[in-house]
Image (cartoon, rainbow, N blue to C red; front, side):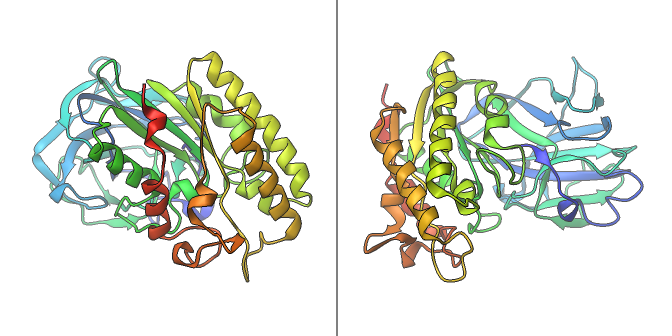
Length: 377
């Protein structure tokens, strides 16, 4: 999910001074879902305050096939091009660009490395990225896009690259998950790809449902209605779901940040219902199936979201999600990981420690109990 990078999540010094990534290489690893033999890459300057000039770009498989590593297998290295063969591109402020399609075989659930070199860098301090990568990115001065490894600085954020698109058989389709930090993987293990969508992908692959791409369109602190981090869902769902390629299912698992900051939980629940109805209606017009997920518990000692009124709002919206018939299918995450004896709280075994975000065991439980019959054609 592309968003404006906050000042605290900008690249480390010296890669943010005198031009962001000026005369520097940025190397990032991405987790793919389905296998493919032809790819292209979406690069976003949606929130950039200036043009984004990319001087050179490459694709490779990372050393050992691992996430977050600085090294690549140079035998797999290929140059990325743009606009029909150019090795460089200038992406206008507010725009999105694509690499040229490249024949490049990748296996399901594999990692891939994208290296970008910026000779001039991006001027100003407004850039596009995704702070909650849970994945290490590397950067080094100079044009190192073809180097076997980088020896510079690292940070656990992604920048600019916003999607991988795969040429796939006609029966393949994308599951778009619209969400917040719980889907973004807060509480998961860095460089381990054990967010619940990653774990669901692994289960789908094991079950033989290898035609389903899992697309994580979530960000920490995101809201449905207003405020929060990144564009609220009502401002971004068309971009992040309706306008993506190959979509078959759109899932909404969001609202905890709206409720957690609410003065009136039931009032927010009513507004969430109206918003979800609008998203579902637009998805149905586009021919997509919709999935609604219940909001998991967020009460406990020290958790600022706690409150009887907010919990009442959660119960109201969850009952509506499950019983209103608005969605083609529902997933009761709250039932999976909430404490059955104290339903306002996460089960202790699944609580990541802040009484809001699950731990890895909680994410695994969400994936393990996800009803796969939703995907039966």
